[in-house]
Image (tube, rainbow, N blue to C red; front, side, top):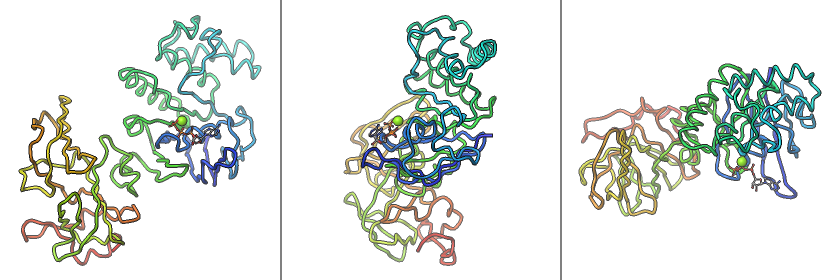
Length: 386
Ligand SMILES: Nc1ncnc2c1ncn2[C@@H]1O[C@H](COP(=O)(O)OP(=O)(O)OP(=O)(O)O)[C@@H](O)[C@H]1O
Ligand SMILES: [Mg+2]
């Protein structure tokens, strides 16, 4: 049993409010990932959940019980920190046993719990070493082991893998996934890593300046971001954007941006004078200079072996990135066209909120007027704001 519920949770440090009223339910056994830019309040949320930081306003419920003022032990939570926070003068065994000793658990029980956790994490050989004699990955395991022995209902992880090298991160990511499956415990996990968020999460909560922008499954956020912020935050390389004043015509609408007129064969009502278009790098296609929806110049090509990123300048600061499978060769300075598959594009109004997108793909039909897809008039009631 370990359901975590935040009701209107706020946090101020002095007069500065940094968490502005969070409502969120983390289900029993769920792997919830918190993502968001630096300083948006992810660690503060975890620390309030663990009881390391007071809650200024609102309610934290664990299994329906108000826990605002409960001790960390009563909450049944254990937190794993980015810097591991191991005691340097204690052995690994002593580090892992420390919490249970404080709770006056009988010695034989402590020994059994530590041995079991060490087996789970494959650190039996390290139990007599001190933290200074461990590698980063081993230290991280010990920190996780210290949480496991306390048998908490809820695990809180604050960027636990960020100090590890790339290979070890992948390894530990898989191991943590296995651990979650095996223990079936509720886990709240903070990360900056897109791959960790996408692959580990049951659901992701995207934070921005002390608020949640969207909560959903990884693919839900990827495919249907509710606003420009989430669209730009989820996905790596990030979504390409262009925005500008919109004009409506018989063939759809046109936005004026980057010294070109970009024709969008859809009748979209941006709800204002500005429309933003977002296109994921993998949806773009490089075509002949005059055959695309956008004219661009190749700036740089990054060959990753199995895929290629081509950075294309559109005259703006931010280049557009085209992701292609396999090895694609493009010369810097080459003029190209970028084709946008309009049924995969994302549209956002002047207020940054989503207008329509992949959910509406079925309502966009190609017509035989120059090959441009057009929105059917009877699809006006498909939920897309007009
Ligand atoms: N003890 C404190 N006193 C004053 N301000 C604080 C304190 N702890 C955090 N803050 C502020 O609260 C805000 C949220 O901080 P927090 O550490 O939760 O961000 P974060 O999302 O975890 O960032 P990062 O990704 O960099 O770890 C920041 O503006 C930070 O400066
Ligand atoms: Mg943090």
